[in-house]
Structure formats: structure tokens, C-alpha cells
Amino acid sequence: MTDHYCVFGNPVAHSKSPYIHAEFARLTAQDMDYEARLAAQDDFATSLAGFFSAGGKGCNITVPFKQEAWQLAAIRSRRAEKAGAVNTMLMGKDGRLYGDNTDGVGLVRDLLINAGCPVKDRRVLVLGAGGAVRGILAPLLAEQPKEVIVANRTVEKAEQLAALFGDDGNVRAADFGGLAGEKFDLVINGTSASLHGDMPPLPEGILAPGALAYDMMYGAEPTVFLRWASAQGAAIRDGLGMLVEQAAEAFFLWRQVRPPTAPVLAELRAVLSKS
Ligand code: ATR
Image (cartoon, rainbow, N blue to C red; front, side, top):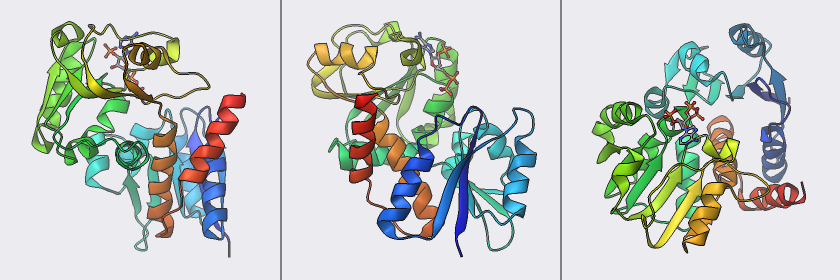
């Protein structure tokens, strides 16, 4: 019998998840389908309940429902608990709804495996202090970087995150101006600035030799942040690999099968560059 999965969002038509999971299912010969479901802004809970009461096995959750999914989960993984957001759900054998967050592990796998960029003992700068950054800090700190600095325009929000994740590793807050004179091996842009074609106001000279600049956003062209980093000699990478890896982790939770990600990432990249 075919098992049913979906992604909830609003809007959701643009989501690449149905394509990614269909490819994973094909490559691993899993009998499943996966569709995009538009939930009403004020009625996600009803949509979610309807999906699972009709026998749905698991779902992803995207903007703007990740925080509400966190509230609706009966049990949460530790990483979801700390992220304050749930992007993956599944119905447990006990009939309880389990919530996880695979975004952070997706980023870490993309860095370590796909980009070959070590995190352990490295100095890491994370830009932004919104939901996207909160979602990645626990898995990032679990890799034992030497230090993570969270820099945000509104420094109070970075301070709150640094306090929240202080138990997970060596993390502190800064404002952008306070970064002058520092050097980082890895700079991760988790702000939404790239969405608007903007650039966080970073001082020059913060990229150590051989640094990687990573933007959690992706698009047909490099973001302003990636272009800035490239002009300073850094290696650059966008968030398409993170997207594929967070999906793979969700797939693994649902199916206990780890799908191959490299061919799917290559296909997506080819489609994106043609767009
Ligand atoms: P998300 O869920 O994508 O993280 P969010 O919670 O609204 O979205 O957070 C957006 C983040 O991008 C915030 O850290 C925001 O900084 P502020 O907290 O100071 O608002 C950051 N951001 C957005 N536009 C920015 C810009 N042009 N320059 C620098 N930071 C920006």
C-alpha cells in the first residue's frame, strides 16, 4: 500500500520538496507519494489533523507554520525543542504526533559531507537571529566549533539566542560593527537580507584565508552576500544543499532509509540555473 506524505505551507506551490521526495522515493524504491498542501493561514491545525486522520504517515512544514507545528507536536526531539520550530512530523505507533527539526542537521551535513568544510575547532560567524538561525544552532554547536558568534542588526535578539544555546557550546552575541578585527573560517548568512537583495553591514577583513561563506538562501544567481565574499577570495556555497539534506533527514526519519542526495542536488542545481 502506498504511504502518503506531504508538505504544508502558505504559499506552497513553489516548494521543491515534492520533487525532492519523489526523487528520493524513486532512487530507494519506496512505495510512497508526497504532495504540496496549501493550509489556510488561520487553520493549519485542522489541515494537519485531517491529513493524519486520513492515514497520512508524515509531513514537512514550511513557512509560516513551523512554530505552530512545534506547538501541535505531542512529543518533540531535543533539536526541535530548542529550535522552537518543527519542520518534520510523523505519526508514532502510539498514535501521538512526533515533531522534529531537520534544518540544522541538513546544514551540518551539507557543510561536512558535500562541501568538505570541517566545523570542529573552527571559528564560525552566524549572521541573523531569527527563526532560521535558531533552527541551526544546536546541530552546529554539536560539531564543537571553537566558537560561534551570532551577529544581528538587533543585538538583543542575538544575545537571547546566545543565552538559549549556551549549554550547547561556546556561543556569544555581537553586533555587526563589533566584528571588526575578527577573523572567521566559516560565515553563515541566516538573515533574510538576501531575499531583498541586501547585504548585512559586515566590516571588511573578517574572512580568514580559506574561509567558506555560506548563504542559507539559494537562487539561480549567487546572493549579494556570496558575491561580496567571493570578491574577497572566500569559497562560497548557497543553501540548496541544505534544502536537499534536511529533506533527506526527514525521509530517513519516515522510512529508515537514507536516500542518495548528490544526484538530486545536481538535478535541482541544473533546473535552477536554467530558470
Ligand atoms: P527567518 O525566519 O527567516 O529567520 P526572521 O525571524 O524574520 O526570519 O529573521 C530575519 C533575520 O534577518 C533577523 O535576524 C533580521 O535582523 P533583525 O532581527 O535586526 O530584524 C535579519 N535581517 C533582515 N533583513 C536584514 C538586513 N537588510 N540586514 C541585516 N539583517 C537583516
